[in-house]
Image 1: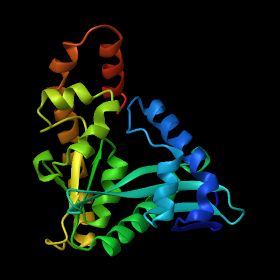
Image 2: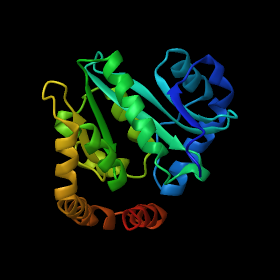
Image 3: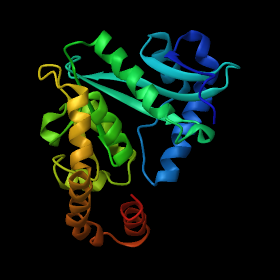
Image 4: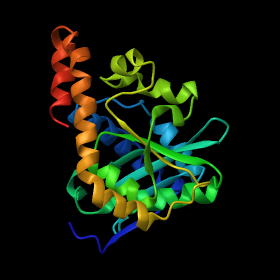
Length: 231
């Protein structure tokens, strides 16, 4: 798809008409990946738009292309860029990277002292995060806000997360700490140099969790195993 006619900007109340489409695509994308995400309502997405805490991508004819929003945790000490979703026809075009960059910049503007974090199983997202200055961290370095972790309940891997006492799961944690001021070009170069190690690290995590998965029975085991081997 052509990107020349796509605008990535801060969402506002004029974008309310796209909220239901965004919610539907978030759910469909999660099902396609075999994972779950915290359920969001149309009203919740519209609130983020109205508060100026969301980024939307549209064509010049106002066709929806992509979306992402900001959530703050632990008394605004931590910020997550959540709900990143791109319309199927525009995936693998670089739009996700543009949206992530804009929502990251918006997060820095609104919460300059907050740590920005994310959880992901995808190397593509890890690459984008690294370009922005994120670094892999342990779960203990993330927010301890119960409301954030409650959002994992709809994920098929929630049992794994809880069995590990929220210290580990299938996702890799990444964090941007403004106190460290990492230079994006340095972390991007580091990712390029060590991407193979990152991939091995993720596979090692998965293999160590196989014993847990094998302890599951029936449809739940098949669902978890299917997700694991399709990462």
